[in-house]
Every structure is written in structure tokens, then in C-alpha cells.
Length: 395
Ligand SMILES: Cc1ncc(COP(=O)(O)O)c(C=O)c1O
Image (cartoon, rainbow, N blue to C red; front, side):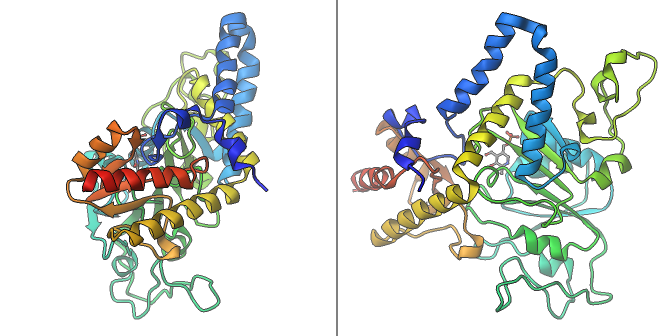
């Protein structure tokens, strides 16, 4: 049994606010904060006497990040944000062919590709749901969407109907979870139907509480930051790239630490490492990397399954209470497409969220309504606090 009451004590923010917006930014848990501070103590007390330990610790974090998403350590590179990571990816493959994406995306997903003049196709959601299948297999007699499952609960394999594949599309570009309405893409189904296209995932709104298995899902590239659901603070991000692509595509930038042996200080050549860390050009942003490592450790101790279950329990409660009060829920609610984000309709959401802020309740105006995104340390009282404040403000 997880002691959620004890865990809540790791979040001093709960004493000040009703904070329900982890889709914007998560508060750093105290154990993660303390683990991160250790770096500054060492920096002040020992400076570069600690260098070798820090490098070893960075590699331990890389291994833990890799394990978290079922990748290999050599496939992980540390970045500063999702946008940074998505630019690294777009730089490699934007010219390979058409990019299929959708109109719900956060701009961090699409801007790096548009900037490089990639040919973009945007598909529209239907009832808040994005289905890539009709666009990948336009004349297919049968195709599987991320939402359709067989009776055995397995996702049906996509039939490769000869001559029906749209071969112009080379990249499928999608968020795992959409920031505007919480729609969760079925990455496994997408991986099944992608054929030999690249599957590029912005994992920002799922990373930290939803399972990601890059091998099972056949993801080619993934980018995320770590300040939202992983609660590791601004400044740190991660890119996964399948090892097949690391050597195939040449980076457009390199630094002295892209070399296999930076300690040789070779200023006449620019050899590249064979690992994704070739994109870490200079000295590492240690505090961000250590915060990511500490957060992954903290989350793993609670257990990702327990975290996911807890968030669904809280969002179930929220949805039931909203419905009882007659609110229209904008987020798609089928179990296979739900996430930790619930958006419901209110008139003038911007104004209302500002009013809620004066009552120390933090939610966002997004997707035509109010977006609520609780985390595992929230409880039903937090949700009831929001609902009673809404009642008072809407009257
Ligand atoms: C899906 C998604 N991607 C990216 C971002 C922002 O990413 P960054 O600022 O790390 O580039 C957000 C922020 O809300 C987001 O919701």
C-alpha cells in the first residue's frame, strides 16, 4: 500500500495552493530538491575535484532514463527543452519527405519542422481524437486507428494493402498526449501502422506518469522536457533516437565533447562519437541532469503503475463530480484515449482561471475551457476545493 498522505508531505506547495496544473509545470518534490542541492554543495566545496564523480553520475542518470523508456543508454541525449530536442530531430530528417501531423499540437512539436520548410500535412481531430490511419492508408479497405482494438484486447495489426500506402509521408509527428484536450495517442497502434516511416513523438504531456516503451512502440525519435509531470524543474530535457539513426544521420553542429575522446583536446579534427551523446557539445548542465535522475529515482520508488493509477483515480473523481454539476467535458473520455488532463467547458475560461487564482487555485485556460491536470500527491479534497470555488465564481 502506498502512503499517499506521507508522500503529500514532500510537496510544500500543498500548504499554499490548490495546485492542479501539472500540464504546465510540476512543483519539485523535496527529496528531488535535496538531491539536486547536493551538486551545488559539491561545486562550492570541491569544484572540479568532483568532475569524475559528476561524469559517472551523469552516465548513471542516462542509464536510468534509458531504462525508464526501454531504450539503450547510447540512444539518450540530454537537452534543455522539448523544443531543443525537436530541433535536433527535425534537423536530421525534415528533408526526408512529407510530415503528417495534426492541428492540436503544441507549437514546440511543429515549429522546428516548419522552420526547415518541411512539407507538412495537418489532420483535424474528430471529437477530439486524431486518427492517422486514413491518411497513411488512404484507400485501405481496413485500417486500424489508435482507438480500435480487437476482441482479444490486442491491437490489430495493420493490413498492408498493396498500392494503398501513401508513400509520400515519411514522418508521423505526434504528441503522446495533447496539451489542449488530453487526448492520448495509442503509440503502439501507431508503431504497428507506421511501416517504414519515422515515428517522432513529443512525449512532454505523458512523460513521468504514463508508460513509454520506445522499442515496443517502434518510436524512432522522442523528445521531452522534464519540468511538467516529472517535476524535475525547468532546464532539462531528453531525446531518444533509435541507434539505427544515430550513425546514419550526420549532425549539423558539433562541439569538443561530441568527440569520442574529448580529454585529448584535439583542435584539428572533428570526430564524432557513435552515441546520441554526440549532441551534448560542451560541458554538461549537471544540475538539470541530476534533478532528472533524482526525479526518476523518486518516481520509480513509488512505481509508475501506482502513479498512473492514482492519477486516473483522481481524474475519475473529477469527471464524475463535474458531470453531476452539469459541466460539459471537452476531453475525449474513452479509457483508451484518456490521460491525466481533463478539460471542461466554461464561458470565459481565461477570466475564470484568473478568479480562481485569487482563491489560490491553480488551473489553466486551454482548449476552449478549463484544463485540470492533477498529480499523485493531489487528493479528492483538492478537487472539491476547485469545485466549490467554481460554484461560487460562476453564480
Ligand atoms: C506538448 C508540449 N510540448 C512542449 C511544450 C513546451 O516545451 P519546451 O518549452 O520545453 O520546449 C509544452 C508546454 O506546455 C507542451 O504542452
